[in-house]
Length: 330
Image (cartoon, rainbow, N blue to C red; front, side):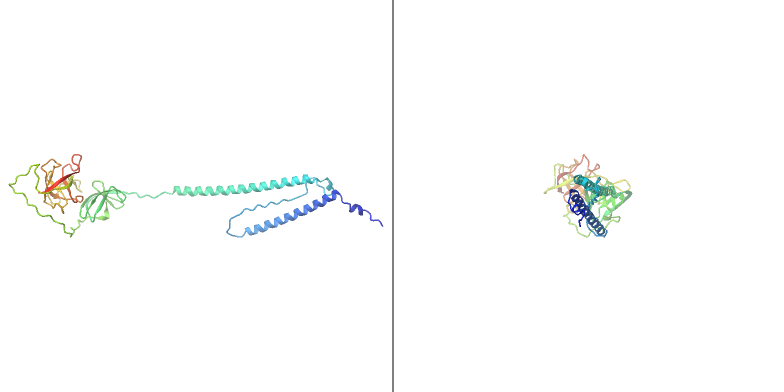
């Protein structure tokens, strides 16, 4: 008995080899695609869980292989494998390029959102207004007294420069009060309101040193000339000048601390602990051009130590300015 067609069945030809290779390639590609899809589904399920990690972009390239154009399983000898490989390579390249482009666009959008958020934050910080306190002044005329040593400043605040100091019990003539608690004085300076009182404070109980009384000249004693000076050793003193003092009612006062009236060429103010009230002094080379003799009838908060303040109608002006002279006690 002859087996018809057995030889032809087992006859290995080029077409049969190509057909077998194509079947193997198709099965391998399908298996790979199935595995990739399963991995993608598993990764999506894991990412859906709320975990606090840095987001990572995973690029998955899925290549679906189908019979190329012109391939006929019935006639595999007509299929060109080189042409099929070139077509598959072009398809894979196109898909990878599209995935890379999408990832780049996503990163660009994220960067733009971050930049816009930063610009919004900077704009908000720049446009936030800084509150400033507006200081107002209310007209007020009264006399107050220092309850301690007070710095007189050029403006209503401790950040302003100090002009001078006033001392316990000194009178301060006020013309206005500020909204932040400062008094404006008649000469345009400022003192702290809380350091003053409208009631004149009692004199301190601290005894002040007294100088030995000086004998008054007898009535028949001739007044020495300008070149004559009392016997004894003189001391160098700072000489300044003051004039009539403004009052709260807008006028001027010439009344001294000893209740006398200021007289140019006669009245001066001094530190009573060094030159007591009533002391007659001689100022060498009299700055006012007089005989040089003055009587201590006044005092002031800024007149301390070896400092003589001479009364002049013009006060301290361009004509009369601070100088130094030798002073003798008569």
